[in-house]
Length: 167
Image (cartoon, rainbow, N blue to C red; front, top):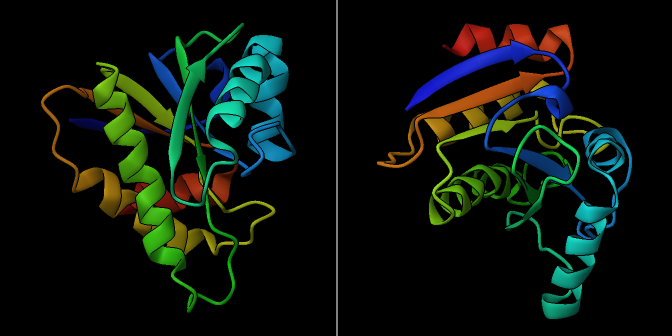
């Protein structure tokens, strides 16, 4: 599996799936979540509402999949990252689960390429350097016969440099 690091806007990335740093309501919000919902349009929200009707909210570390609506991808994998509380409330394990569960869901849908944002590093306050290490270890340690390419899409210079230094 090839791992690539880009600086840019995840809503413009052409992969089979992009991952959304969602909130547990799945109804959109700020940051990456809001940008994906705005760019993808009502189809994403409609699918999220169907998922909520079926299972309720999405728990931290879990992942669900929807259409990508107007985005250049086919799917959006929504995962809920942990809020940083000092690192003693299972945050690393929960963040690791976000990446692994998203990769598992991609495999279940025969997705060969997907892009991740920097999950939990915005309003959820996860330290960017620690989050980058967890993300890199989770993806680099995942072995797949299906997924060929994973892209870490960094919105800011700080995350881009952190991820680049882990390569």
